[in-house]
Length: 270
Ligand code: IPD
Ligand code: CA
Ligand code: CA
Image (cartoon, rainbow, N blue to C red; front, side, top):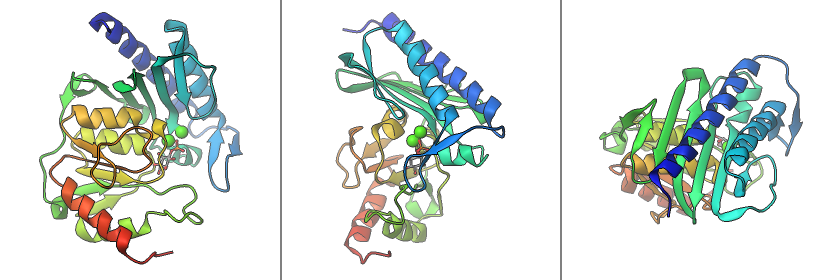
């Protein structure tokens, strides 16, 4: 059983770590930094690594024994009942090119249930937080998903996987169907921020394929706590290990689901 004080201490630690990592990201953006290739186009910068080290060491110091699933490193096994899921810098391609759209994403699972989520967008000084059953907040003020519908009047978002030129699941058919049906589709390059924006009512929906747990853990809790829906592409409840996600205000969910189904049955575009 988790006390309210215990949960607040975990949230405070996650917020402090996210803000510190965000400060580092802001200071180093547009400066010199090294990067390595993880794949043909997929890179990791020294800032991603420095942020992960900062976040994990701060949380591990406050909660020794907890376990970690983070993007850039493997960590020794800890208590599986408490697992922090961390994307130290979501939007690395943007970051490396000086395109100021990226964030820190930190979530905590307790006994397999998402319990808290923090997303920090340093360039806008926007801190999105959620605790399970406690609502979602932006800089301390409650947020709700939008009440806009139908899809024709909605702004939605997506992203494409790094192996878009090679993989069979490149999201092009989905993009084609949804771009034709929605008011607009944005492709900004940071999955966690797309989810935070659905939670804040700035986007009506978001879908993507081939995501990792750290891309979606904090953001999916935010959307649910803001009154939205988070599923896979078939409308089944989304778990953070699922690669496909569909998040929305709930009002346009079925419309998007139907178009994703139609796209899946159509001929490949590449
Ligand atoms: C990526 C971003 C991007 C999404 C990719 C992710 P990274 O994460 O969230 O928006 O389209 O699928 O891998 O590599 O910048 O942390
Ligand atoms: Ca990511
Ligand atoms: Ca990342």
